[in-house]
Image 1 (cartoon, rainbow, N blue to C red):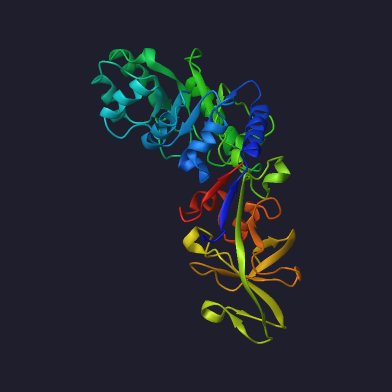
Image 2 (image 1 turned 90 degrees about the vertical axis):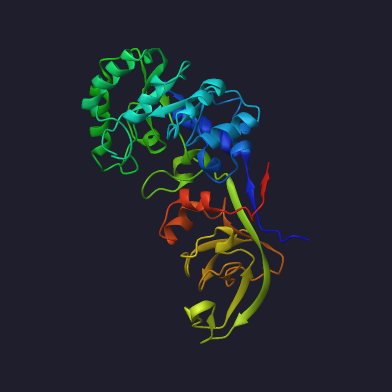
Length: 358
């Protein structure tokens, strides 16, 4: 019999979060970002759950776009990282994918195509990862006209660097650069809004927003957790208590003896560890829950198990499910304790943990 470690995925909560994104997007439409295996939730079940709501999906790469098609879904799929070889453009034509082109060599590939896909152009307004600088856009448009590719251009996208920080002026500066850079082509669509942008008062969202982490219940904002933003947790990560014992005052727990009991402490071992994707750097004090009672981790997370202090849950017994994150303990809380973000935790759950959907 397999262990009962599991990631339970609430697809109803996913749909609620998508609809909240649509409310915050205002007149803009929202393309559902399902990259990185649906942020660890399973790209196919996530895309299928949103099929009646989302008019468009967004992924990072071709493999993810093909997974959506293989599931029988026909909505357009935006490929945020564009294409990595000229032949990929032909596949985009046949499959209805919309690559985001961000470099001159990708534009040159268009010139080699007899049939061309519809596509977007990335504008670098300050993130400085991918995209054309605003001063380059006029030349880009001239090049597209020269090769006859302009009819396939859907519009422009950019990406915000600091939208999670309401005290930063950078989002407003990037928005202004983007508006100025694209103003000469008002007939084309525009997209700027990542998850965080949905929560910035007065932020223009233009034609398409791109909600990602918020769909899965994680907070995109600094110093906020998902429920504070009206988001529902989608993944509940659970694992069973496999033993309990009393650690005597002065005894240590786990590798390195990093936890030393200052009093007799009832301890439990939980069948999950960093081999399942639970963060190794989540140290003593990281919250968990059992039977609705919040408890804490103690000692160092091992590959296959971790220890918890059961002082706040005196009735907990072997076999009881422990919530590592979910409705009682937010994934954002765990991420803070581990010195990371919820994006990394959700996408890091390994294939050893089965997903169960409801």
